[in-house]
Amino acid sequence: MVKRMVQANQANEDSHIGKFSVDTKPTKDMVVGTLTRDINIEAAVFDLIDNSIDAARDTIFARSDTELTDELPDSYKGFKIALSFSGDSFSIEDNCGGMDVESLKTMVLRFGQRSSHQMGIGIFGLGLNRALFKLGLVSHIKTDTGSQRAELILNVNEYLKSDDWNLPAEGFKSNGKAGTSIEITQLPDEIAKSFGDRDWVEMYRVDIGRRYARFIQKGLQIRVNKVLVTNGEVRIRPDSRFPEEYKFFKKDGVTIHIRVGQHSEHRFSAEPDHDKNLNEPLTPQFGWTVVCNDRAILISDQTWKTGWEGKFHSEFYGFVGIVSFDAKDPAKLPWDTTKFDVEMNNSTYQTALIDMRKFVAKWRTFAGRVKRMRSKGEELLPLPGTSSTQKPKHPSGTKPLQKTLAKKSKNLLTIKPDHNQFGTILPDDVDELNCFDKHLALVHEAKGLHLNFFTYSGMALIRCLFETSVVTYLERHGKLAELKQFAIDERKKKKLNIRNEKDVVPDIDEMIAFLENQPDIWGAVKQNHVRHSLRRMAAKKKLLNSALHSPWQAINKEEVFLIRNEVLIILRHLIET
Image (cartoon, rainbow, N blue to C red; front, side, top):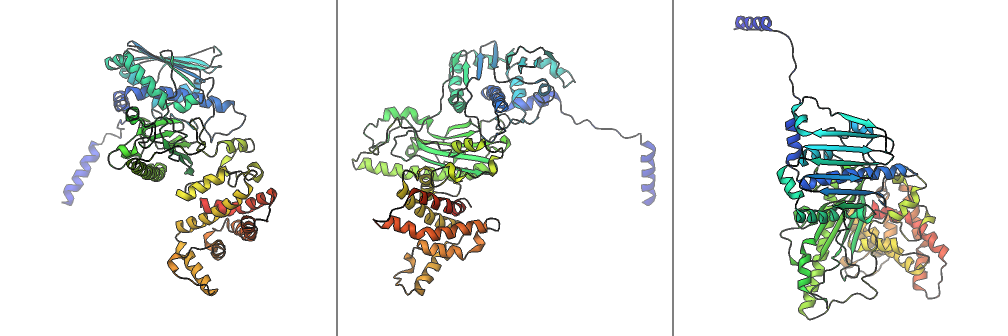
C-alpha cells in the first residue's frame, strides 16, 4: 500500500507543468442581463430622475455656507428636469450640476460603485447603468459642470462584443451652463410601444407627480413632453374629526416622521356631507406611503408590508398614513435596489412598523365609533374652531430649530438647544420614540404651548407631563410595580387609610421620593445632572401647587421659565431614555 502511494506521488511530480490562474471574472452579457432583468421600464426612468435630483442636491450643498448635510434641502427652486418620450427615442435633460470628468472616468458608470451622495436617493451604483442598458441600444450622454464638459456614446451591441470594459469619452471646453442630457435611441419594441402611447405617458406623468411630490413641493420643475408635472401627494384633511396623529424619533442615524390622518376629500358615513359615490373613487389613495429622503417608495400601500393584517377593508377607508425616513447615509434607509419596495428586515423600518400599527388601531377604534353614531342617527360635526383652510402642524418637529442651530455648529447631532432659543416647555428636538397615546399627546402639547402666552396652563402641563413621564419611564424599565409598592408602604408609615391597595395611584411626592432612592436608573454619565434636576423639581413643587390651587397666588413669567429650565433635564431623560 505504502509502495503504491510513493509511486503515485512520484508520477504526479513527474507530470507537474506549473501553476496557472482560473478566470472568474463575469461576462458582460451576464452582468447586463442580471442588472436589467428584474427592473421595469418605469423604475429605469425613475433611476435617471433620481440621478438628476442627486446632482441638484449636491449643488445645493456645495453652494451652502455651512457644512450641514444632516437635513434635506428646503428648496429646489431653479432646478429643472425635462423628459421626452416617443416611439423612436427617449431623452432626459437637467440643469442640476453635471458630472465632472474625474467622476465620469472612475465612478459614474462603474458597475456596483456605491454612490457618495449625502442624503441621496441613488445609492447602489446601479441606476444609470441599469437605465441605459434597459431602455435602448444607443445612448448619448452630454454633461457640463460649468467648468468641464464631456460626452460619450454607449452602443450596447458593440460594448457587449468587446472584451474592453472601458468606454471612450471626449472632453470639451465648457459652455458655462451646468447640466446633463441623455438621449437614448433604438428602443426595444416593448419600450417603444409604451413610450409612444399617449395614455401610458399620461399615467406615468401622474406617477412621477406622486413619487417626487416632496421635490415638486420644494420648487423642482419636472416636465414630461413639455407638460409640467404637478404635486400628486395625497393630502391629509386639516378639519377632520379624526385627530391628526404624528410622531418624530431617531434610530441608528435615521430620522423618522410618522403622520396619520383622514384623506382631504373623504367624508365619514356620519358626516352631513357624506356621499358614497364621491368616496368610492378615492379608495386607491388610502393606505400608507413610505418616503425615503423625500422620494416615495411605496404609495398608498394596503398590504402586509405596511402592517395591514388581512384584507384592507371598508373600516379603513379614508385612512392616509405617511412615514418618512431621512438619513445622511442613504444605505441605512429601508428601500430595495429598485426603490419600488421596502426592505422588511431593516431594523429602523421594523421600529416604525410598531407605531404604524398602533396608529391604524386608533383609526379602527374611531371608525367603529363613527359607525355606531350613524346607526343611532347621530351626526359627526367638525370640532369648533377647525377650518378646511387651516394649515396642519408640520410633523417633523425639528426643522425650524435645526435651521437656527445650524448657523452655530457643524456638528448638529451633538447639540441641545439653548434655553433662550425656545419659549415652549419642550424643545422640538425631544425624541418621541418611547411615547404613545396620552404621553405622546402631552409631549406634543409641551412642544407647542408657549409659556409666554399660556403661563399658568404651562405650569399645569409641566406637572402633568412630569407625572405621566415618570409612569411611562418606570413601566418601560420594569419598575412601575416597585413605585406602587413604595407608595403603599409610605402611606402605611403615615397611618393613612388604604381601602384597596389595587386602587393606589402614586402622587407626585411619592414619585420624587422613589426616584431619589433609585440611583441605578439614571446611568453613570448623566446621574449628577439628572438627580440635580429632579431635586429642583421637588423644590419647585410647592410653588407649582400654590399657583395652580390658590386663587391669590400669582407667578411671574420669569419664574415659570426658570422652573422650565431646571426641570427640562429630568423631563428629557424620562421621555427619551
